[in-house]
Length: 140
Image 1 (cartoon, helix red, strand yellow):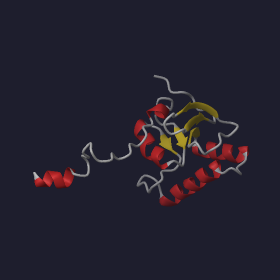
Image 2 (cartoon, rainbow, N blue to C red):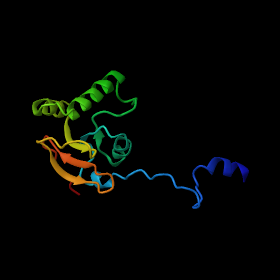
Image 3 (cartoon, helix red, strand yellow):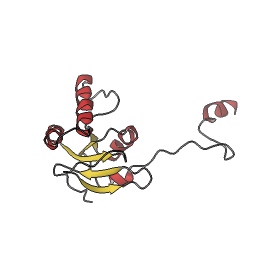
């Protein structure tokens, strides 16, 4: 019994104590993005959760054994360049084409690029899902 309390004590919080924050769910975004489509985001919560629904990310936020580390760094640089307020439409389109980006998942502090079409937003976090570069809605 003592072992259970030691191991599980941090996972089971009694109601009298402050509850840990719940991470947002990304079902609101995943219901629009077909499995295998590429999403560009720099949000670590989305990057942790969204791939579990089937979409791929331009750049994983942490090392991935399936992706060379130098390539991952190049991709992270491309994500930062795409999301930079100073980026031009042609620069963004080149990045989107290079990595097959069809979707953006932006936090509420980011401006939606002119070429992006908003598809959905999260009332909980204010994040926006937008389609770019010919992304097609999920069917079925």
